[in-house]
Image (cartoon, rainbow, N blue to C red; front, side, top):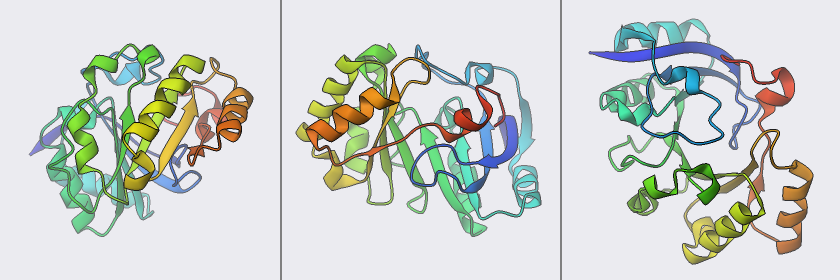
Length: 212
């Protein structure tokens, strides 16, 4: 069984509650969405078809317990579920970064799903699969990538309407070089939102460098 893999690399986790942890990233090729701020468009195509056993062998070379499966949109390849299960069976602490347009229901329960909810300014609002909210568990996280004050207000309303923080932790992140982090921090504090504001650590350290 093979998956089209764009890259497998070792770096610090730049986002989520796992930020700063040495992590192996398995980046799958392909994505059905085209967010205006996408920083991994290079993974829309290309890559190599790799046997799952070979992926596991490569991951093992780095000697870390943390693995993130990402894209692109990893769930766009249906056999991604096989990889996720295999990684969990190997004892890894596995997270999945998904854009929220594909059903997360079949994802192995041992995986921490990082679910990106697309905001109006992302250009992909219409592709949010709202049924995914019913599948969230306490070990998952919801992420909003915010382009503007309008995005923030929209996310804040959804946070309350869907009682998202009752389901799992919620992350608010400013689009790199577009929304001032200090502005987002001020808004979160003023509204006393029960969310974790995050910056992309890898971009602070290395800028917009693929494979970091």
